View (tube, rainbow, N blue to C red):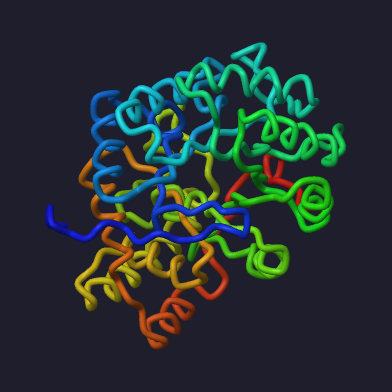
Length: 335
């Protein structure tokens, strides 16, 4: 992508006044889940994203293993242009023991505690989008939405978001305080949201932020079998990388790569352009750790897919990828 490439167009996420560049940036991999990372490269990536017109930057306190290091990294990186971007972070886990980050905790007192910590880690006086990271079955969603609504009234938060929430939960939360955005996995690999979730969001005027829009990197084609990844890399246990599934998915990516090449693009650009074509209320947040890759991702907003292209993608992946996006024990339950 040349230096004079036009900046990303803005998109409207929902009906509460939130707008963002058409492609966002997920920062999780800058501190966890995908093996060793380099802070200088990560900061350079965030700066390059901003130069390209990326305005939505996504983090979470749990991405620092409970330490807040991911939020701190993002906060340092955007300090020079903080007022020009949207900082989105998440609550919803018990972070008192970094060695055990599994328990959910969306009690109002914990939401407030985590919010104050996130504000400090990010070095800001407000969080633009505050998501419930995972639905807590032990805390009524009405209490969650009400608490975030109070934080919005206090000026500490601007917009309420949910992540991996089901239709009933979304409706109940929205009845207490307007939900601006939902974040859930969505890509040519993972299409479950198309059945009930996307129609509901459009009914209620809620924007959609797909995470893992490149199938946790599988759609980049730079992949290897699960056993070849280190123990701290989530691809080691992701079903899509396991024997049998891996080979099927690799074949699909090769076919997508061929289609992309016919349009002068890469498979990741094709996959992101496909997502953008699913609605003007969608802003995917691909994660990357290099300026080169974030440049490639941003270019996808310039790629136009024809009806024939969309049909061919459906032929290559009629039901998404082989293998579930999470092990059954970790799969979010949509209610």
